[in-house]
Image (cartoon, rainbow, N blue to C red; front, top):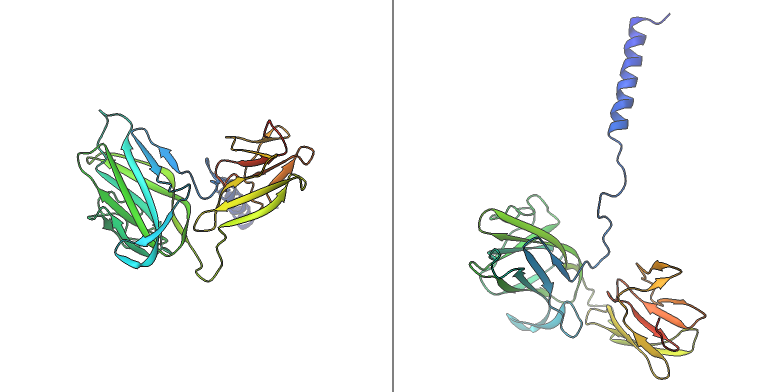
Length: 274
């Protein structure tokens, strides 16, 4: 016979089981994971944000504007309203990883918040101690350009921008942002030569100033192409991160990326390619 205490214990076990069942976490919310380094442009309902590429590189490696003796990574962006009659770009707030050593910003007048404080105008990233915010103010304009200069070499990672118009309209989107510090003691490749497509073609691998692959060219009679999407066995090629790319067909095609390069770069023995 079950005693009163036994019944209470059973009821407690059942209740705890129900609690854990309802609290079960299912992997990956919608939209996750996102491939690094994130998109180089993004759009909200009212605004468009574009990373400024220099010679295909983002960020661009330049002399620091406030200290020309140093090298800086220039994360440049253009933020604009989608419509000439749309809302103004009054505030553009960028999320910057706490690992990044900020040299300066352009235009002047930006507001930098300590990590964890969040932006004091929009409340963006309050209590997020792994990041800090930089807010650019540009009242009554439909378009603005912003530059964030990070000391040394830096590579982009997935980040966010928040755009506010007036005091009510606030929108955000994912964008490639400052987040991965470079190692000044490691070599950075500018160009490499590889034999691809089963050893039939030369591939000239071109890298940006931070060592990221941005383009691949070849020598005749082989050909190169930059298709928007590459299909392998009926599936769109994604997360092609091998330093050797992927070779398919009858050893006639080698493709690099995405995500690096962001648009796939392919070398083929003949047209069509791939």
